[in-house]
Length: 463
Image (tube, rainbow, N blue to C red):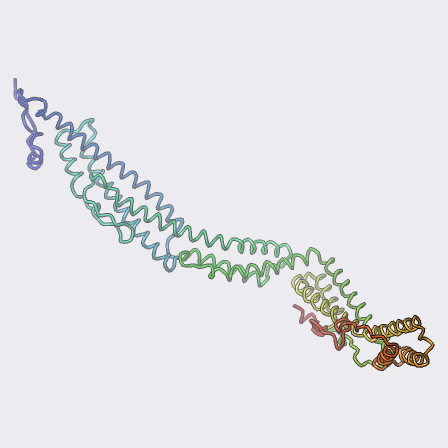
């Protein structure tokens, strides 16, 4: 029987595991048998290689996910600004570190796979060499993580059970940075959402009305673009105050375009309402003039204390309500919706102020007539009281009554003198004059106005 030949021992390997090369003795028991030791070495090497494969595969999946997220959130990074650009640079540094780590693991895995071979069971020498490879240092695996993305100590041995601790920490830190940018952008986009919808609706409405060149709309679009650009470039430092100009512009243009739309959709109704309002102004102003004429012709013969609207409030070519409304009607027929929308609002404000002023002229000009009627009623009530007391035949009372009645019925009427005579008749009768009406019920002086009809602009002045 020939002796079994063993391969020549590798000096290093022989020094590290001499039992792998020892000749077995028939007298040896199972605990000293090298077969279980060789099996354990092979199992340990295969387990370490399996962990290395798993780590490399997990890192590949993580890097693909992070790469996709970074591309979506950061783009190429050239448009980022401020703190967002600083955090993006840190993310890129961490990504580069992970890719270098991945390449080192792949290189180590490739060499380990080659050393392991395809045999179902590696030989003892293969297992020992594989174990030594996996437990030894490897270029790229000992590089520490970038500052700010991980505090784990660098690992030099690929077969260490915690080989992916620093990798996971860096990957989590990168994910947190990307999530912070995404969250900030989402919050700002939510704030800008209403403004974006308002501007979009304004664009559609202006296209329907045939007014695509509205300056306010162009300005709102520019403000919105600037706001979104700021959110894209530096969401970590943008504040709600930075977005407010875009929100304000959008709200203003939405209000303007709504007025244009309402004017376009209900022009005839709005013009009819304006005509009705003008008719009420004319009727009220006429009532004030009639009251003034009645006072002059039938009462005092004097316009002192009477009021009227400013000249030209109705038909002045430039300031009158009638010509102004005619110009707005013509502008509507020509499709000048912005002029009509602004002009009708301004015309309505002035017309309503003029109506209020005309109402005050009526109240002021009718005051003398009301005062004479009140004095006449009071005089008749006192005469009836005298009759009830049997004093109506008194010469003194009869004379006072006749003088007061004559003063109140003969033009021109001096209301102050007539009131004094009524008071004398009451005093002679022994009665007390009723309390006069409150001053607020008898307007005096020129009526106050919210706006003067002279403020009615021409077409050139109309908003």
